[in-house]
Structures are given as C-alpha cells and as structure tokens.
Length: 156
Length: 439
Image (cartoon, rainbow over all chains, first blue to last red):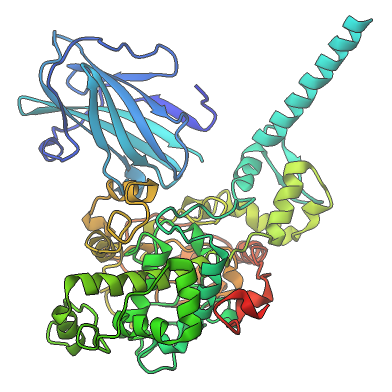
C-alpha cells in the first residue's frame, strides 16, 4: 500500500462510548447469515484493529487506495469475532468518519451493504479536507454497540 | 555487442523513468528562482493546484457542450425580456466587464438580496451551486434567478411565450430542443404563471394551478431548456492560464524561465499557502476550492448575530427541488451527480456554512465573503490572521495560522498570480442573434 499520502495509524481498542444513536442510523446494515471468514481479507494493503470491548476484529481496505482528497471512495471491510466471542452472530454496522480537530465530520452519510458473511462495503465516503480523520466502524449486536476506530492522515 | 547496447538502453530507460517519477512525486527539492525553494512536499502540493483540467461532464444536461445551445444561452444570458420589468438580465448582476460579478456587497436585482453575487469564472467545475448549494447542477441553478422576486422576477409561462413568440428565439430553440408546445390557447396557457408554494394566493400561482398538469410540464420543459442553454454558455467561462499555472508548469518540467512567471513575494506567499497558512485546507485542488461548505464566523454585514442558515437550508431546498439531478427534468437521473445526492446528510453543523469559492481570479472579484463583508483581499487575510469580529456562534472551523503583515503581503501577491481573465471577447457580449447565422 502506498503510504506516502496516507498514514494509517491503528488506534486499537480505542475507548469509545457505546453509541446508541449510531445503532439506529439508516446506514445500518445487518448481516443476516453470518459466517466466519467466508471471504478472507487480503493480507496485504489491509489495516486491522480490535473493537473497544474486544469482541470484533475489523479489517479494511479503501478503493481507491490511498484515500484521495475530496473524491468519493469506498471501504471494503471484514468483521470477525474476537476475544471470547466465538461467532459473529447477527450484527448491524454503521460506518462514519470525522475530523475531531475541526469539530466536524463528512458531509455525506455512507451506505453500508453486506457482501456476504463477514464481508461488507461502505460507499459514498468523501474526505473533503486534508488532515487527520478518524474512521468509525460501529458494530451493534443485541443492542450493544462496539466501535473499531482507525486514524487516517490525508495529505492530499 | 547487441547485448551491451540493449543493456545500456535499459539502464538509460530506467534512469529516465526514475527521473520522471522523481519529478512527478516531488521527491527532490527544487529551486524556484533565486530566493525561495520548495521541498518535495511543497512541490507535490503546489502541483495539485495546476493544471486545471477541462470542465467535468454534466450528464444531467445533454446540451451542456452543444455549441448551438451555448450560443442561444449566451443570447439569453443578456436578454432583458426574461425579467419582470424588461430591464434586467443575468448580466445585470454577473457583469462581464466586472468578471461576472457586480462589485457590490449584496446582489441587487429587482430588490436587494441578502447575499453577495458570486463571480461565474469556472462555474462548470462546481459540485454545488449558490452559496448555500441549493442546486446540484448548473442548469438548475440558472432556473432560480429567473423566477426570484429579488432577481429577475420573471415566470416560466412568460418565458416560454417569449421563446415561442420571437421568430429568432423560436427557430434557435427548436433547432436544439425540438418543437415548442402549441401555446396558442390563451385559456390553457395564461400570460403569466409559475408555482409559488410560499405565496399560494399570488395570481401567478393561482394561474399555474388552473393549468392542466400536462401543460404545466410542457411549459416547465421549455423553462428548463432555457436554463440548460444558459448553462451551456456559462460552461465556457473558464480561467486556467494564470501566471501561477505557468510557474507550476515550470516547476513540473524544470523550466527555469517559467519558474520566473511569479515574483519572489508570490513564491513566499505560495509557500505559506501550501504550508503554515493552511489555506489549502479548504482551497484545495486545481480550482482552489473543495467545493464544499464551511462556517468561518465572518461577522455579519449589519453587525448582528448570524441569521442566514446557509447550507442547512440550502441542502433542505435541494433535496426537495423538482429540478435536482434525480428528478424528471434531469437527462441522467442515475448518473454520478444523481448518485451523489443519495449520500447527502443533514446536520445541525451545516448552519451558517457557505460554499468555498474558487480563488482563480480572486484578486479582481471584490468584495469578498457571502455578504461582501470585506472590500479587499488584505481585509480577508487580516480577518483570517486576527479573527477580529468573528461570530462566536457556529464557529466550528480552525483558521489560518496567525500571519505577520509581510506574510499577508506575500499571500496577497500569490493570490494575484491566479488572475487570468483572458476569454474570447465574443463571449462577453450579447450576440446579434441566438444562432450562428450572423457569422
């Protein structure tokens, strides 16, 4: 992966509060027939982290990569059970991003769709400014939301 | 021997590729003139601002690049019969001799508006239209001033009648868009009619409601085609050959002569622009705009609290507009512009946001900001440097780093290098006829 313009920092187990608002977002995508590792993520060009409570491993890659400044892009991602969680179970997923230093996020609401099993895609993302962005994967199961969070530096 | 020659050629080719990669990626620090140098990151950032490619396609307007449509549109751009009083046209506020703006703080058509008239340079590159982005295409932008009571105050029924009743306009129109509807029945097609959902007792609105739905649609299609022709003309108002572009070309190719196209002060300003001054946070890309919306806390013109909802209202208006890209009058209801709409979200933080303007030709298009609050570029940069008078409410963006006065002068010198007002003089005036027949 070309890292010159895009510095991926794995935040790992970021301490994030449960976000009930996100859980009801229209971007939610339920995975109705979860199966572990149906479509294994490619080992290269991938970033991965564990959700804040440790129950999910999220891996993702962007299309295109690196993330272009002010152009739409997609995120292909995989969610696997982690820690003591043995199966993915029925989950819903929201994807969003913010620039915490600017107190604002994207002007768009990504749309998440299941590609089967643990494999998902989020479309409609656009980072309109260079700088530090955080990408959030909010995974909800039985009313409990965990967040896997990645930090991305967009230099443009 | 052949092998040696082949190897030598291979090595030379590899070196050439490596040099090209270095040049394109800016991996090597480059000198630009006598005093100012740019490191690899700065070079890469500078080259992101030039060249400006041709305008993006607009698949929602299949006449967008039709020369005959542009000619008709140019004629209509200057056509005062589109207005209620017969005295105003698009060019009354977007004055060609004033770089397609009017030099006033607030627009002034039939009435004084509450926002500044933006210049039309490079308008074809916009992602959203109006300062609040309440239109998603250039043609759907052009519709609104024609019926706005603050601007031309016209109505679509009268505009359709104008096209049908003027032999030259009718001929030009029908050559491009096909036959006009038969509007000879005055009962079915009154002199004046338009929808005014916020003024339901208005005579135009009542007349509109009395029309059959098919007739309303036929008239609206003429109205839309007029706007699509105007948009075809406006797409030609492109500025992309500034002194900065020549400098950037010199930086890209290593041409030292071209690197002298801008002054040392401008180079220092450019270094700040892509560096510490953070201008590129919003003024990014080859058109020097992210095309999106920001609230930078500019003090209001009357000194009171900010009352203009900006993007928050603009997005709401866009998503309910019958002229947005997904709707019936668009020529591509599922293309990229339409798809973009499907991802829109509304958020309280949109309150008070306005669209980032392009900086191309910024030095010749004062005053600045959404109400023309600042008369000069110096005033703008002083505001960014000091935030004096900024509105505390809704200020959610970090600003430029504080600049010294001499740095402000340098950034101004750089901004002045973005001036390129060269345009075919024939595009600056009303043509004799709406077709090419007079050539």
